[in-house]
Image (cartoon, rainbow, N blue to C red; front, side):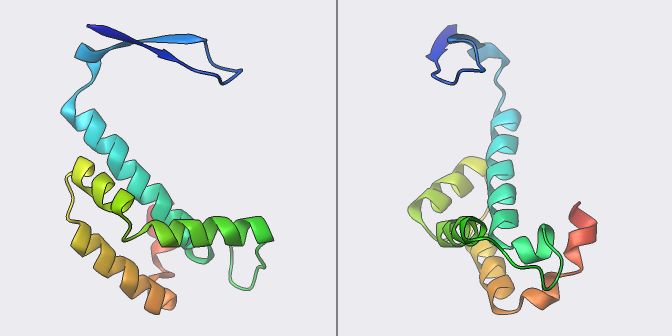
Length: 112
């Protein structure tokens, strides 16, 4: 079975054929795990993106705040369910990182 997705992005085809038989449970789970991972990185740019002491633009601060606010939201809970991960454990780690980001500075090298 194929579905047609209509897109308005100029650099994408106007109609994209998606064969549902090619979509696996694991590929969907990986996608949702990546959403959590990228939002985590966006929530802590001082750990993952920028060096210590670098200043952030107003837009970068707004993006960081948006990503931080996402954790604990109903959208976060849904994404965790889709990813098959424990939302409470991730939220506990998020709060720990928020309370003491210096503890997590060493993770930058391990995740890049």
